[in-house]
Length: 178
Image (cartoon, rainbow, N blue to C red; front, side, top):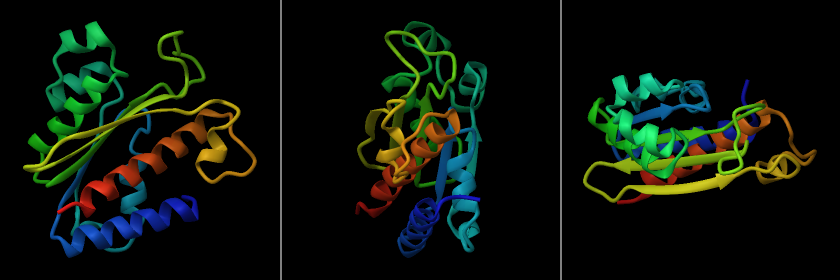
Protein backbone atom coordinates (compact mmCIF):
# COMPACT_ATOMS: atom_id res chain seq x y z
CA UNK A 1 0.00 0.00 0.00
CA UNK A 2 2.86 2.38 0.85
CA UNK A 3 6.40 2.54 -0.48
CA UNK A 4 9.16 0.68 1.33
CA UNK A 5 10.71 4.02 2.29
CA UNK A 6 7.48 5.25 3.91
CA UNK A 7 6.89 1.92 5.69
CA UNK A 8 10.46 1.89 7.01
CA UNK A 9 10.17 5.46 8.29
CA UNK A 10 6.81 4.69 9.94
CA UNK A 11 8.31 1.59 11.60
CA UNK A 12 11.28 3.58 12.93
CA UNK A 13 8.91 6.27 14.19
CA UNK A 14 6.79 3.71 16.06
CA UNK A 15 9.88 2.13 17.63
CA UNK A 16 11.23 5.53 18.72
CA UNK A 17 7.88 6.65 20.15
CA UNK A 18 7.43 3.34 21.99
CA UNK A 19 10.92 3.57 23.53
CA UNK A 20 10.16 7.08 24.80
CA UNK A 21 6.54 6.35 25.78
CA UNK A 22 5.27 9.01 23.37
CA UNK A 23 1.76 9.20 21.92
CA UNK A 24 1.38 10.63 18.39
CA UNK A 25 -1.34 12.73 16.77
CA UNK A 26 -1.59 13.91 13.16
CA UNK A 27 -3.45 16.87 11.68
CA UNK A 28 -3.64 16.53 7.92
CA UNK A 29 -5.10 18.59 5.14
CA UNK A 30 -3.51 17.96 1.73
CA UNK A 31 -2.46 14.39 2.61
CA UNK A 32 -5.98 13.44 3.70
CA UNK A 33 -4.89 10.97 6.37
CA UNK A 34 -1.98 9.35 4.54
CA UNK A 35 0.49 10.08 7.36
CA UNK A 36 -1.75 8.44 9.98
CA UNK A 37 -2.50 5.67 7.49
CA UNK A 38 1.19 4.90 7.05
CA UNK A 39 1.63 4.69 10.81
CA UNK A 40 -1.47 2.47 11.15
CA UNK A 41 -0.15 0.11 8.49
CA UNK A 42 2.65 -0.98 10.84
CA UNK A 43 2.13 -3.57 13.55
CA UNK A 44 2.31 -1.94 16.98
CA UNK A 45 0.88 1.40 15.87
CA UNK A 46 -1.83 1.19 18.51
CA UNK A 47 0.90 1.46 21.16
CA UNK A 48 1.75 5.00 20.07
CA UNK A 49 -0.88 6.53 17.75
CA UNK A 50 -3.56 8.44 19.67
CA UNK A 51 -5.57 9.78 16.72
CA UNK A 52 -5.50 11.58 13.42
CA UNK A 53 -7.42 14.65 12.36
CA UNK A 54 -8.28 15.01 8.68
CA UNK A 55 -9.01 18.70 8.29
CA UNK A 56 -9.36 19.13 4.57
CA UNK A 57 -11.81 22.03 4.73
CA UNK A 58 -11.21 25.38 6.41
CA UNK A 59 -14.26 24.76 8.57
CA UNK A 60 -12.80 21.48 9.82
CA UNK A 61 -9.57 23.28 10.75
CA UNK A 62 -11.63 25.76 12.77
CA UNK A 63 -13.95 23.25 14.43
CA UNK A 64 -11.52 20.41 15.17
CA UNK A 65 -8.27 22.27 15.81
CA UNK A 66 -9.40 25.75 16.87
CA UNK A 67 -7.79 27.64 14.00
CA UNK A 68 -9.26 31.15 13.90
CA UNK A 69 -11.27 31.82 10.75
CA UNK A 70 -9.72 35.29 10.52
CA UNK A 71 -6.25 33.76 10.32
CA UNK A 72 -7.29 31.49 7.47
CA UNK A 73 -9.07 34.38 5.72
CA UNK A 74 -6.03 36.66 6.05
CA UNK A 75 -3.18 34.24 5.27
CA UNK A 76 -4.87 31.25 3.67
CA UNK A 77 -5.04 27.67 4.90
CA UNK A 78 -1.70 26.94 3.22
CA UNK A 79 0.57 29.06 5.40
CA UNK A 80 3.14 28.73 8.14
CA UNK A 81 0.91 30.17 10.90
CA UNK A 82 -1.94 27.81 10.03
CA UNK A 83 0.38 24.78 9.95
CA UNK A 84 1.82 25.77 13.34
CA UNK A 85 -1.64 26.25 14.84
CA UNK A 86 -2.76 22.91 13.40
CA UNK A 87 0.14 21.16 15.18
CA UNK A 88 -0.65 22.95 18.44
CA UNK A 89 -4.39 22.32 18.09
CA UNK A 90 -3.81 18.62 17.49
CA UNK A 91 -1.83 18.37 20.74
CA UNK A 92 -4.43 20.35 22.67
CA UNK A 93 -7.30 18.19 21.37
CA UNK A 94 -5.69 14.80 21.97
CA UNK A 95 -3.83 12.74 24.52
CA UNK A 96 -0.62 12.88 22.51
CA UNK A 97 2.85 14.21 23.27
CA UNK A 98 3.99 14.86 19.71
CA UNK A 99 2.13 16.07 16.63
CA UNK A 100 2.62 16.70 12.97
CA UNK A 101 0.48 18.99 10.83
CA UNK A 102 0.54 19.31 7.09
CA UNK A 103 -1.25 21.68 4.76
CA UNK A 104 -0.57 22.34 1.12
CA UNK A 105 -1.70 22.65 -2.47
CA UNK A 106 -1.68 19.17 -3.98
CA UNK A 107 -3.34 20.13 -7.26
CA UNK A 108 -4.09 19.69 -9.97
CA UNK A 109 -5.95 22.98 -9.44
CA UNK A 110 -6.08 25.42 -6.58
CA UNK A 111 -2.64 26.92 -7.01
CA UNK A 112 -1.98 30.64 -7.25
CA UNK A 113 1.11 32.63 -8.23
CA UNK A 114 1.85 33.14 -4.50
CA UNK A 115 1.05 29.52 -3.55
CA UNK A 116 1.49 27.30 -6.59
CA UNK A 117 0.67 23.61 -6.72
CA UNK A 118 3.42 21.86 -4.79
CA UNK A 119 3.53 24.32 -1.87
CA UNK A 120 3.46 22.43 1.45
CA UNK A 121 3.83 23.52 5.07
CA UNK A 122 4.73 20.95 7.73
CA UNK A 123 4.82 21.72 11.46
CA UNK A 124 5.67 19.52 14.41
CA UNK A 125 4.95 20.18 18.06
CA UNK A 126 5.97 18.33 21.18
CA UNK A 127 4.75 18.91 24.70
CA UNK A 128 6.94 21.45 26.53
CA UNK A 129 9.25 21.94 23.54
CA UNK A 130 9.64 24.38 20.68
CA UNK A 131 7.41 24.07 17.67
CA UNK A 132 9.13 23.47 14.34
CA UNK A 133 8.05 24.39 10.82
CA UNK A 134 9.35 23.73 7.36
CA UNK A 135 8.07 24.89 4.03
CA UNK A 136 8.52 22.69 1.00
CA UNK A 137 7.91 23.26 -2.66
CA UNK A 138 7.72 20.15 -4.77
CA UNK A 139 8.14 21.12 -8.41
CA UNK A 140 6.23 19.15 -10.97
CA UNK A 141 9.36 17.93 -12.77
CA UNK A 142 11.53 17.17 -9.74
CA UNK A 143 9.38 16.29 -6.75
CA UNK A 144 9.53 12.54 -7.44
CA UNK A 145 13.31 12.56 -7.27
CA UNK A 146 13.20 14.32 -3.87
CA UNK A 147 11.11 11.45 -2.54
CA UNK A 148 13.12 8.55 -3.84
CA UNK A 149 11.17 8.10 -7.10
CA UNK A 150 13.80 7.96 -9.82
CA UNK A 151 11.21 8.44 -12.56
CA UNK A 152 10.37 11.95 -11.41
CA UNK A 153 6.91 13.13 -10.47
CA UNK A 154 3.97 14.95 -11.78
CA UNK A 155 0.69 13.77 -10.34
CA UNK A 156 -1.12 14.91 -7.22
CA UNK A 157 -0.78 11.34 -5.93
CA UNK A 158 3.00 11.67 -6.16
CA UNK A 159 2.89 15.07 -4.45
CA UNK A 160 0.84 13.62 -1.59
CA UNK A 161 3.27 10.72 -1.27
CA UNK A 162 6.21 13.13 -1.19
CA UNK A 163 4.48 15.34 1.40
CA UNK A 164 3.64 12.22 3.43
CA UNK A 165 7.29 11.15 3.44
CA UNK A 166 8.50 14.59 4.54
CA UNK A 167 5.84 14.79 7.27
CA UNK A 168 6.82 11.38 8.63
CA UNK A 169 10.47 12.43 8.62
CA UNK A 170 9.65 15.64 10.50
CA UNK A 171 7.56 13.69 13.02
CA UNK A 172 10.35 11.16 13.52
CA UNK A 173 12.79 14.02 14.11
CA UNK A 174 10.51 15.53 16.72
CA UNK A 175 10.12 12.16 18.47
CA UNK A 176 13.92 11.69 18.60
CA UNK A 177 14.48 14.91 20.53
CA UNK A 178 14.83 14.64 24.27
